[in-house]
Image (tube, rainbow, N blue to C red):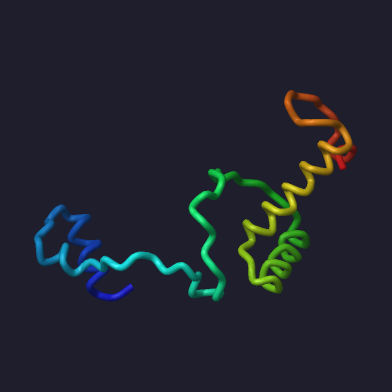
Length: 109
């Protein structure tokens, strides 16, 4: 982040908003290519996302990190793909998910 952006940020936080700081803020639209990875940015029609916390074994998380790094993906993308596949497999085996059925977690997949 350059100094102009920092100045604009701190000025906005302190409540002093002058024309000079507003004119320093960049007006360019965001790039269509993810500059970090050289990939096209995902379209704005993405499904809404939610955060959640879970606990997994260290060995499993290490492998997920390695997969994400190898494939040039974020960890959340790898985990999301795995969860989607797990839900599809579950629905293929037990039918559409539409209510609560309690089973042992080991029997699910």
